[in-house]
Amino acid sequence: MVVLTGQTLTLNEVKKVLFNMEEVVASEESMEAVKKSHAAVTKIVKEERVIYGINTGFGKFSDVLINQKDVKDLQLNLIRSHACGVGEPFPESVSRAMVVLRANALLKGFSGVRPELIERLLELVNKQIHPVIPQQGSLGASGDLAPLSHLALVLVGEGEVYYKGNRRPALEVLTEEGLTPLTLEAKEGLALINGTQAMTAMGIVAFLEAEKLSYQSELIAAVTMEGLNGIIDAFDEKVHRARGYHQQVDTARRMREYLADSKLISRQGDIRVQDAYSIRCIPQVHGATFQALDYVKEKLEIEMNAATDNPLIFDDGESVISGGNFHGQPIALAMDFMKIAVAELANISERRIERLVNPQLNDLPPFLSPEPGLQSGAMIMQYCAAALVSENKTLAHPASVDSIPSSANQEDHVSMGTIAARHAYQIIQNVNNVLAIELICALQAAEYKGYEKMAATTKEFYLEARKTIPSISKDRIFAKDIEACSAWLKAFDMASLTR
Image 1 (tube, rainbow, N blue to C red):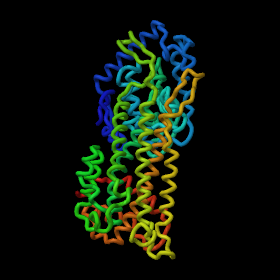
Image 2 (image 1 turned 60 degrees about the vertical axis):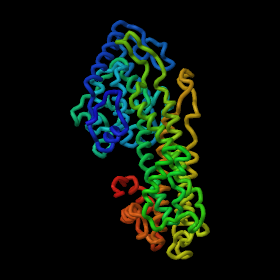
Image 3 (image 1 turned 180 degrees about the horizontal axis):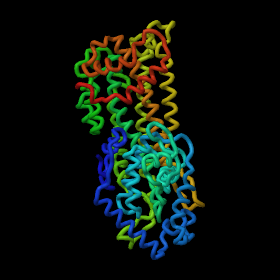
Image 4 (image 1 turned 180 degrees about the vertical axis):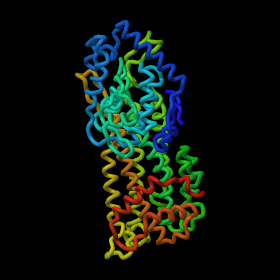
């Protein structure tokens, strides 16, 4: 059970909720803050104080006053009109994360919603009812309006949900589970959609995958080194401490550990004096990616516990301030940074693939073919890796440098953070496929060199991988191998290796 306080949620807790289906509950203290905040909104409506989003229109309509009898209609109209996302839906894990993050933000007690609304969000999580939320349509300020509106529709019994493996009308599933659709009260519609939870949720899921494949990329590179008789001296701790980046030092240490007792690696001068950069500079390049991921993790954990709607209610309603915490710039920049950093793992991996298949760069059979000429072997797998790397270069273009005015120029600078997060996720899927190709080639190279000579850790990894990826004894439809290897890597737990 994960306890939400609005202040303390961690990535590790979110991971448990998303992938272990851990249930969530709100802390008593946070619910007390929610009650006080809601009481303040009720008082504002009763006193007919003019407050943005409570009794005014939205965006450019902020100067239009709304009659007290219409404040509930105002919130429902907001949700319906803003639910105009398009494209493929977010993965269910991202939708689930959005619901958790929105509940956590509202539990900070600055948003003025009823406790019942938060309880309903938690019920969606615990009953595994996940809103169907289209991916496209958010500018990343004023928050993720379109995606979060599709989430909010479910609370009022509209829209669609994923439930028990099926996509179904929300009202049908709510009725089945004995949940009555909510009628939104003052400010609740705005509080639900004025935030950065779509980009942050997508960012969290992308980060968790990126972190995992970053560690896997080192182990795969270690197998490649054995297939190429790579020089271990370049990973000497003295070299990396001389530079000073602890992530680089850590990568070099892990590489030494993976290859500790290998009979396939070489020493400086045994075969050659130096390896190519794609081998020799693994700690520098992979380590730099970990530096970027550390930055991204820090920003995600702040944003997960942030109040990002507008206006925010302070001092029991005596101070209601319209600000701009919905602006997604911090996450937009972090996602763009992650895009570039993770794309580099594929860039350097593809160069290692080339070294594995190019007979001018190694002493292996050309293209790792069992019968060079008659059998093409891994020739076109390298093409595929090159294509994915090239596509990543386009996707890695920073979304955050773009902006376009909206709402009649009231909202004249936006973050495009959700686009950045979505593209980061696409890049990560491409990187996963490139690493799968490197692993397929590295396994074959290690087999040619004698897998029994591999280090204990890499040999265990080799034998596990061979259960999914058989040796290349003749040409076959390698797309199936890439798909199978990519899926295996996603499921593979590095902790399962005995080291």
